[in-house]
Length: 327
Image 1: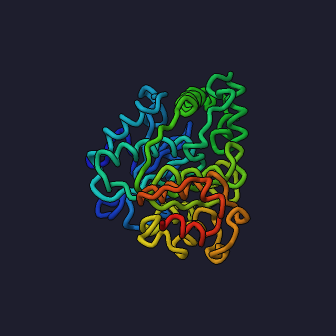
Image 2: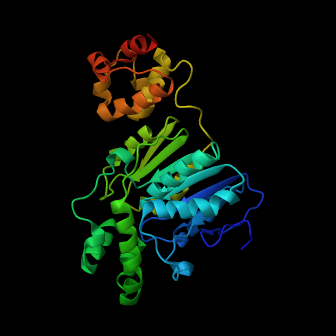
Image 3: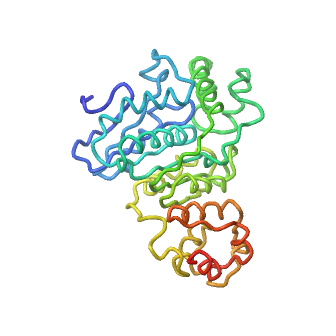
């Protein structure tokens, strides 16, 4: 592999030295770089994909595994940051979404503007990442296997082979320990975030991806596809398209508090067509709740404007909000 690819931490299945962008991907718990091999056929020619290879699996099987988030992120950033020389889109699925989020937070501090978009898949937003009552990594082998069967995916199928199961169990237990002990902080990004999930994921409610909007002051978009935790394998072209779509502008504009500006931002957060958001439409009837009010509030705070939730809830229409926020 060429020296410009930061081994042993990164795999590149189709090198494109002249590409305009890098797509940096992070696998799920128990996963390896090979889980992204099928993406190559769907990528534009101007995108080169790099996939992080966690230690302890595939060609890194002899490397000590890492079961603590900060240590893993430190190692990844130290390896990849010096080699990143073009705009970056970062993608992570499940555990990989949280690793990707933490890596982007570090990169944003070190090299602002390098990462243009964070795409998170199959993972609730930080505010909804609650510790579970029973940690999977503390279960016996049968308990870990049962969890994988519930989630589905290729790892569950591999457990039918005793030799593969013996090799995979330590890796999976390690990764569950990492993500189950991890607690996200309160740092907020200033870049575009795209959140994608399956509508029947047994590990999370689809609406919990909405809280990723509060993790950034930039634009936020969500996509929900039919399927479970590993929905993306059945919708790969759409997932790649969402990850690499043209960059959007800021989530709010200079006329953010006009009636039309608020109609657009409210429609985006509620996930409804802008035509449904009339100037005097009752927003609670369209699905407004405290979480979505917080998502909107984060955007307004980026412009230096704050409004008490009680005042917003007193007259929840775009026209009333425009008068309140403009004042």
